[in-house]
Image 1 (cartoon, helix red, strand yellow):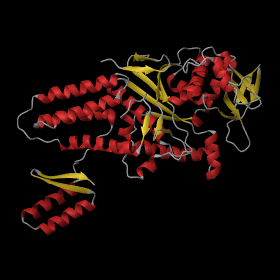
Image 2 (cartoon, rainbow, N blue to C red):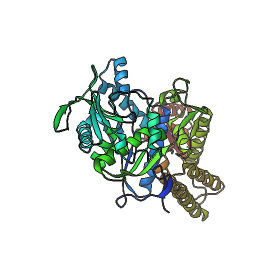
Image 3 (tube, one colour):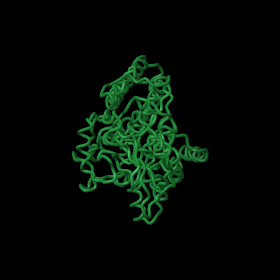
Length: 465
């Protein structure tokens, strides 16, 4: 089966062919760590986690890179509130962000690259843009001159005259044109800065300052991937101006087109049919949702239950539905047991059908909602059948394969530590000798140690508490 994806650049669903064999370099715009990430951010990162894992499932050799914008106006303003250095504040919230990513099972990223650790590369790229005549120096920094780059607007498909019209709301007397964007911001009092020397008109000019928003991404990706790579992702609201600016910077500085072969964008997350915003009081972070008793795997399931290009409406009712779906899948998976000595010959066919239809859905522009529906179709069919030990093993193996992408399984029964096994054996002896008070006391001891026993006709099964 051939993997196809919608390319924002061409506005078409295309067969995915990396630039070099099976090697895929993928970059997704990361966080600006000045507060807790909201669930809109986490939806995007969960959906790109699925995309990354499916690329690996298909046998692609993927390197997944995210940036961390750890120097920004929002960080500077928040650092003043919390009385911390800007980079210290950024590291504080970046650490929390990684904890939240771990909770949601987002673990496919190879490298997080902080902007502050790539200042030399940023300065070098700005200098190349100056050398090639795409940038100019002003009293407050260095700007990219948009009308010098003929391809500006090709990702968002906005004509330059429309972009100019929209840019007129931004007043900055230092810029040649309203639509021009900043590459390097000159140092302001009491703000973090880096020393930088630029050359223009055969003169060296010291401009201590910090990067603009767009330049860090292209400097970082050029450092890791070179001037061209396979796949760039982000939320749909980044198409313009952020990703448009990235294309202009990189293609202008390197002269190589296209900068990125495939652009993938995730749709908006709404809350109760309204756009998420602090002013409407519908702005949720992960801790706020977890504090209401909802579980991380239900949140993850909700985010992948809708195709990444389809807008999602978040409600707590939908989260309850997601929890029920996760419970149903896990109950099926963990309740699989041998009920027949004879292999059921239908199982290999059903398993192959499940894997085939799962891949068919995911190959069709990562249709995760259809892929999940195939899992439930399989469950309904298998629940009517008696299984052998071989059947159980085959199903469990197939579900683990799918879960390498989905990340929603929870192994219910575990092999306990040796000291717990000793207690279980001691309890079994007490039960056989009808010393039920001792058996109950041992069960309570085992529960205090973090394990729960389930008695079956084949002996006790152990779950983590």
